[in-house]
Image (cartoon, rainbow, N blue to C red; front, side, top):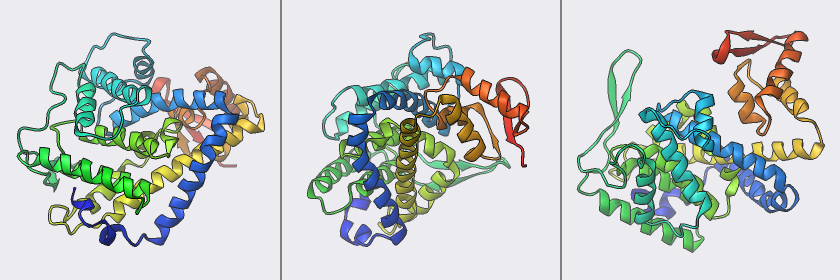
Length: 349
């Protein structure tokens, strides 16, 4: 809510670096309709992969981790048995994401936020869909066992009012067209996380809302490239940007640009990945060629199967393993470890 109090002063002057990345975002948006008309098969393939990655990555950011193969089965509905809380929360995120993508929930409202939170925790035995009833703190826990308060969210007493005001101000500003729509979505995420309206699930809900609201204002890349997956890969920067922009929020003296720069970068990165995958598809290269190209030219010095799945969606694990065996025989990669924990290392020539 604080960020929307005086938008012209807060974001009236956009830093040059953000302007440059917004141009990438807008160019990517312009390509979406073209891809929809010309590459419907690819878009379905990308959407299926992005759905799985979004659920797994957004949960993992909060420490909710399920073994990869089982997580994929749960997200795809191939396994209905939910044995532990992590699996139930994973399924809850899937339910909330599917609700947004498979329905038309209309404009943002407090009711929609509460409903999504209810879905998020609908399989854990209750607790969802209710604002916090006690004050909370956002705490960083450090490797040495110590902890520190990152910021103090809005009090539980003021949370319903602040949340309602945030929704109303966001909707009004999106209707004026005075500021870039992506920046407004980013500001809503920042204020939502600083209000921290729920005891649990705030981060996951903010990412669900961000993907949905971007799509609602014409930036639908999150349906085809997981924004949550991009954030997960840059999670240290994610928390750093949030920390920098929440300082002084309660007093209205905060600087939104560390967070907005990160947020715009995530969307731009997703559009660049979208364009690269469309180009690969149009080139007529085989799936094996796409895997080889990623590993040889784009993978990090050390990578896992999950990295390849993310970069080359729609390719089976069997195909990935086949290519990795070939590259190993050619002396271009070598395995480190065994079994599901195997990492692959690129061999410098």
